[in-house]
Image: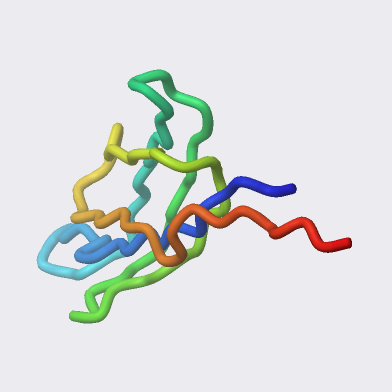
Length: 89
């Protein structure tokens, strides 16, 4: 039996401006379970698209995410709710 959720993390406005030029930047996102950090994700590059950059993340139910470094916007949402494989004879 498996008990997991599929999450989607979306990063928007990942860039910086240096001397009037738009450049790539870096952001670090902490994945947390009950307030305890269990993983880190690194995003590097330039993303100014309104749709943002999306990445899926597989983990246990109830995870949250927070930006711990960098200047961008993140969204962390469940793509697939908790699932448990049915046991069949």
